Length: 279
Image 1: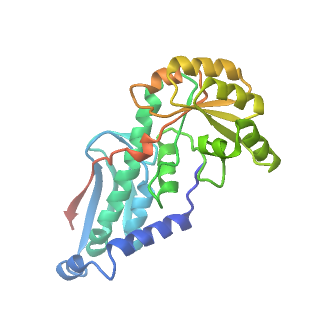
Image 2: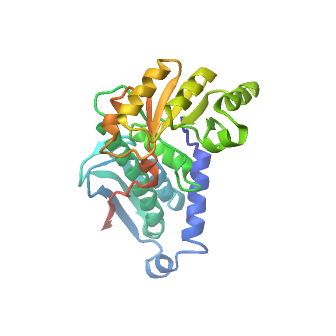
Image 3: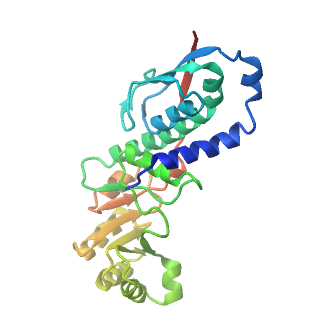
């Protein structure tokens, strides 16, 4: 499970501000009176699942340490269009300078959570679990995987360092699935997953002792055959070309997991606005 520490959040905000603000917000610092105050409401323009709200609010806290903040929802909550997520009150310059970074983060992560929740719903009444993938923006992986969890998915491996995934190129270099699995076992690596795109490979991977078999680009009929071959000897994960139109039929085949790159790679940002009331 992806856990975001406060230190990681603070580091992310510092990098984002360095990119956006640089040596200073020349508009707000020269146009807005130094002591002017604002009250702003973060309001969604569409139905969404919230993710990244605390990170967005920390953006305001960073520049307005004495800001008065009132939250109206939490990450993981499904809210309706025109609902207010939070109200922030404080120094106008700081709020206006933090606005874009806060909104970009909140809109992007809530977009992922909202898309993820849609995929979970499309799987219907099955026991199959939705997994995310490594198809994330560089530097955003922990944040994006956190957002998928807020939408109802489970986290797959974080990177190349915390989970074995034996793919076709590994097999091509080593010579066989069996040899790859044996090498991983000899290195005492846990949770060995093998990618298979044929039923013969599924037979070999299951017999070799894989913990998970990734069933790559298989249709529902072939997935049913693969699940029957495995017969409970290990977990099964369907992947490749999964979309909202196909995920229900895929989940109904009895696979344990479905992994979907689209929930991070292609999720659109949601529309959240910042409504301002001058004090």
